[in-house]
Image 1: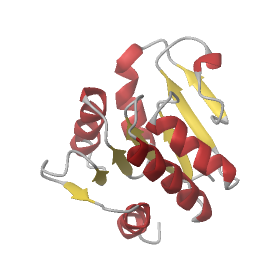
Image 2 (image 1 turned 60 degrees about the vertical axis):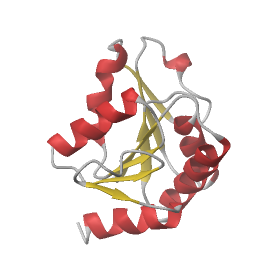
Image 3 (image 1 turned 90 degrees about the vertical axis):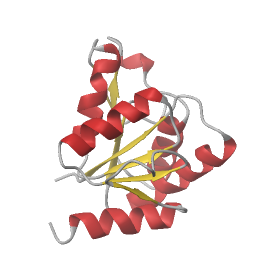
Image 4 (image 1 turned 135 degrees about the vertical axis):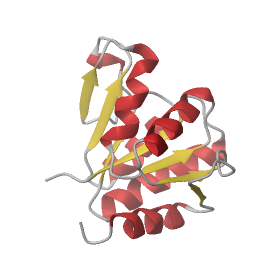
Length: 152
């Protein structure tokens, strides 16, 4: 069975956010997890690239209707035709949510995750929201994931 971790963030990423997400994706794959995200560019592409390069499965929950809209590192593209409404699916698909930067779309995913009782960590934004744990490195994010899921 695949263990999914939601990695959320903007379709535009700073160099720091891209590097963070890339390393996070690789570390998650090394720890036996798969990445689920919105399937687009920026943070999503970086996380998928890192995960894929380490042999992990990547799932893209796409806003559009065409699987070809996914970034090239998505293993399984799921077109929804739902636009940003698909953010709730992205947030709820993973056992834990790791946010990397982002803007209002990412904020909505953080809110959906918290509303559903999902653990959320964040690099770059959203740490001031109650229930969100700040992380400074991809390694800390993976430690948070492991702490939150325990031996499940």
